[in-house]
Length: 171
Image 1 (tube, rainbow, N blue to C red):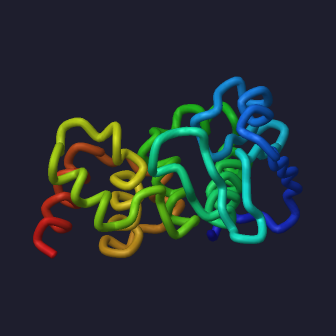
Image 2 (tube, rainbow, N blue to C red; image 1 turned 90 degrees about the horizontal axis):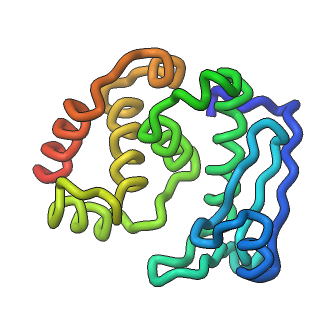
């Protein structure tokens, strides 16, 4: 990521059980969480040797540990670059979409994410991060905007979503 700062210090805490993660996070359904002010990352139960993070939910409940850490570090990097007050106003589709883009993956496979989006284009509750990833990927790779412009420009998410959905359905 062009906004990555090599000098930033991140502390990563990996829970050895879902119960400990739930205690630390006060919620146990996510793969990980970030506290941008402290640059702390808490990761749910993991299998480090197999590069997996597991969450205490129904499937999909596995994701690569390396991807989750990249995603969470990116949250911290965005917060550091733009400041906490501004970071808190960045729309979820930009923030989560860019973090997924840097991670190079989402919880869903491309096929599953696209299938869910096609099945219910109105309610994205089962595929929102997949959709956000595709929206950011489209802007960066198809429209060739910069990461700076992604966060600086006012982009209509509904117009972008329709454009991305149309393009994905054509492929």
